[in-house]
Image 1 (tube, helix red, strand yellow):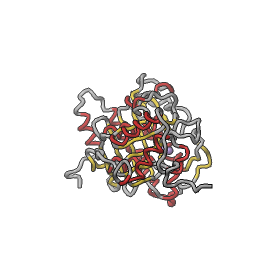
Image 2 (spheres, protein in one colour):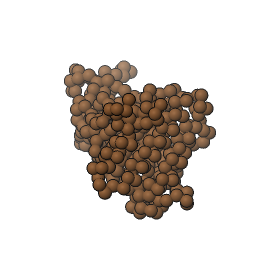
Image 3 (cartoon, helix red, strand yellow):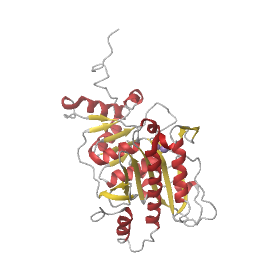
Length: 357
Ligand code: MN
Ligand code: MN
């Protein structure tokens, strides 16, 4: 079966040959990340038989209930990546402060940032979950990294990717030369290149948003969604389907595979939060992947990869997908400042007009 197939290690070695000065540390780090993902995939696949389902009985720094698998996946990422000498520190969704490597291990030149288990609320219902990671250069190779060292815009990422634990386990990554998908061959325990060049289609036929938040949306988002819902007879003159998995990795994988657009926009639900998703370990890696696949990722107001983080756990609005749709949504955000939006579906002229009282 390997006769005409490329393993992840072979792919990385061949990529590295195009950069003669490269030390191989990035490859070593990516292979360690892949090992952590394989270990997590195995535990996820065991489900209830592995005794890993359910709540861990504590909350994380985000104030979210930690699942047992959140804790397990976080520990696996730390253990697998702390000793190799590739990283100077790690930051995780599950840890309030950056992780300082044990004293006996050498400090490397990279920073590893990750969401060890994305979509963990979906575990108990057996829907796809994943892990998301981002690799940055540390400003001080060989020394422990400080919090500020992680606060780099996403454009500085040298690698970004995710593993998706679905019907099959896949690793999807970019090192800045396109997006590549690998499928786990479980008997060999190897990621095999199955999608050498992932590119977004030019035209979107699907959008993904949590519509239960509609009353908190800004006018630009309500306008965009209304126009999609209006379908063939509306201003878009074509029909759209709606999707919502509530697992960022699954949404990203679907959009990279067959296009569409995803919105978790800024809303007025909790004025203290500028969005729901985390900039460093969710929005930035997804944004790099999407741009490398030919799409766009935005806050609605600016390119995601240009945002300078102001905190490790900063939350942000995330809109990504095919270029045409994201550009349109950005335009609606600019235009909403000029004039009030009169919803054709929900306003006085609307389909869902309240009965007169
Ligand atoms: Mn997540
Ligand atoms: Mn998570």
